[in-house]
Picture (tube, rainbow, N blue to C red):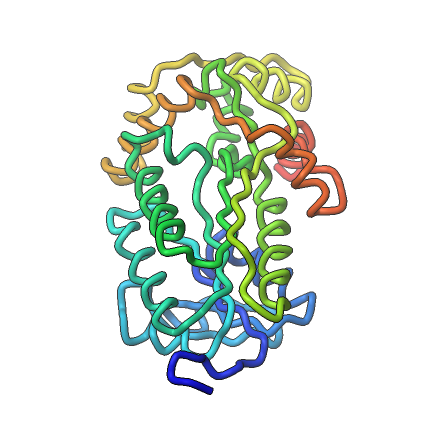
Length: 299
């Protein structure tokens, strides 16, 4: 072995964002498949993971702890939460992964990061994509559209007041279920982890099968609830004000800018994206109508 080679490690996958919606689903599915999973957590024992999952205490801005976490794995799922220092976290993680000579990475970005250039968390992810591309890092870049599960934050308002309040406009948003995102991420993690050598870089638009407008989303809720639900309209200023009433002002403004981008550009996968994703999954993608029926049934 020469000085630039990395000692061969037992197949192992480090999952960042391990306690979040996507990360926890990925860990659950990897553990069920018998993978050797390491979960990066800030505090040990806070979350109950499946049997066999190894908790690694660390933080994406704590270089020593992250360096140690990366030293014992060969594959990484990188997810950065929407925070003011998101791009710093991601670039540190990727630089340390390169330092550790890790050549199997799956990065969770966002769809149309190159179009929504005034939206902070979109441009952060676009910067990370540029690093992956310019340094030719062997990675799968996952670019999800708007999560269906985001609708849970407004479900009570929809059911109580008969109004669909998300100002998504009429350009069309191909929302995707987070469970489908997790299943695709797991497929890519396993594909890279099992490969004998680094695989070429791949980019996937993660979208659902239907492009929804605000009016169409309201109609689907109407059908599921059995009563009228109307679309509240495209007022992003009112949306920001509502968001700021229960969260940080910087995040509310970020979300306002995102909604303006959605109204202008929509969120659509590249040609053939749905077929490509369904081939990876080996089944149809979940529809928004299915998600809404399930959400109403669970309420």
